Amino acid sequence: MPSKNKSYLKSESLKIVGHGKLKGSIEISGAKNSALVLLAASLLTNEKIILENVPWLTDIEKMINILTNLGVKLVNKNNKIEIDSRNISIKELPFELVNGLRASFFCIGALLAKFGEVQIPLPGGCNIGLRPIDEHINGLKKLGAEIIIEEGIVKAKLKREREKLYGTNIKLTCPSVGATETLIMAASLAQGRTVIQNAAREPEVQDLCQMLKKMGAKIYDSGKETIIIDGVNELHGCTHKVIPDRIEAGTFLIAAAATSSSITISPVIPNHLEAVIHKLRETGSLIMIRDNSITIYGKAIKAVDIETAPFPGFPTDLQAPFTALMTIANGESKITETIFENRMNHIHLLNKMGACIKLDQNTAHIKGVQNLNGMDLVGSDLRSSAALIIAAIMAKSTSRIFGLEHLDRGYENFESKLSRLGIEIKREFHKKILIEKEYKLDSQVIKTSEFKAA
Ligand code: EPZ
Image (cartoon, rainbow, N blue to C red; front, side):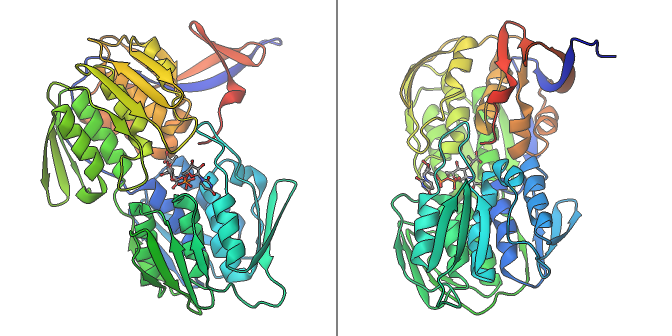
C-alpha cells in the first residue's frame, strides 16, 4: 500500500550473469524498419494487404494503433497481419501517437497520394538526434503538394488546380531512408515519372519497392542511387513477406564475436550484411555463409576502425554494439558516427563498466582492456541498450540493464533468444520508490523525463 508521501515507479531490468558464452542457432525475426514502412504503404490501396514475418515489437504495436486510429482494419495472427484500408475516415494523425513513433511520419506520402490531403504532427527529435524532415517536405512540395507547418502540425494538400501529385525530378541532399520511402510512396500514385537522385539504398527501401511492385507500382532500379517511379492510377492488394532483420542479425554476430562463441543465425540475406561481415572478419572472427544462414566462430579480437555510412556502408544501427566489442579488443580502435549527431550515449556507460574510451565529438578512440565489470546501467536508446547487453554478457560479474522500453522497440524476444543460446539472462520487475520525480538506481540518479523514443 503506497504511503501518503511516497509513490512507486515500476521498472524492468535484465539481470545478466557475465562471462557468457553463446552456443547453438537462433532464428532472425522480420526487419522492424521494413515492417514499419510496409504498414504505412498499405494505406495506398483499398484492397487487402497481407504482411508475413512481421516482428512483434512495441514500435509495430504503435504503428498498428496509428493505422487503426485512421480507420484501417487490421487482423493480427501472430507474425502475420491482414490490413484493409478501404474505410479510412480520418486524415489526421494525433500528436501523442506520432510523437512516440517517428516512423509514423512516413504515412504522409501515402495519405497525400491517396487522399490529396493529410495532417501529421512533426515527429520531433529523439535521443540520437534532431531527426529533421526537410527532405520529406521539400520532395513532396516538388511533387505538387502545398505544405504549411502550424503549431507543430504538418498540413499538406494538393495544389488547388491539381487532381493528383505530378512526377518530377528530385535530388536528395542526403540519402535519407525515410525521405526516400516517403517520396517513393507518394510518387507511386502521381501523374507521370518521378526520378529520385541520391536515394537511400538500404534493404528496407528495396523491400518497400518489392511490395509496391507486387501492388502494381512501376518502380525501376530500387537499391541504386537513382530510383525511377512511373505513377499509376491505383494499387492493388498483395501478400508480402518482410525481409529478415539485418540489424538483429548483426547484433547477434557481434555478441558471438565478443564472447569468442560460435553460433549460426538464419534466415539472413548475406549481402545485407556485407560491411558488417567484412569488419568482423577483420577483427579475426571466422564467418561461413551458406544460402540464408551464417555461422560465426569468434576468435581473439583484433582492434579495427569503423566509420558508419549509408548502405552499403557500415550501418549506424550497429555502431553501438560494435563499440562494445572493441572495448575488449587487442589494440586501439577508432569508431566514427557520421549519420546521427548524438548517437554516442553508450560511451560513458561502457566507461563506467571499465572500458577505456575517449570521445572526441562523434569519434570514439578506444583502448582495448582485459575485462569489463558488471554494472547496473540504463540504456537511453534502442541500439545503445543492445550494446550494454553485449557488454554485460562479456563482463566478469553480474549486471542489470534498465531502459528496456527502448530495447523492446527493436528486438523481438531478445532475452529468450540469448537464453536459448546459453546466456544466463532474466527479466526482473522492480518497484522503485519515486523521490521528487526521480528514482535512485544504486548510485545513479536518473530523471525519468529524459527518455524519449529514438
Ligand atoms: C531510418 O531512420 C531508420 N528508422 C533508423 O533506424 C536508421 O538508423 C536510419 O534510417 C539510418 O539508416 C526507420 O527506418 C524507422 P534518415 P530515418 O532519414 O529514416 C538526416 C533504429 O535504430 N535527415 O536516413 O529517420 C538525419 O538527421 C532506427 O532502428 C535530414 O537531414 O533516418 C540523419 O542525420 C534509428 N533531413 C540522416 O539524414 C531529413 O528530412 C539519416 O536519417 C531526413 C533525414
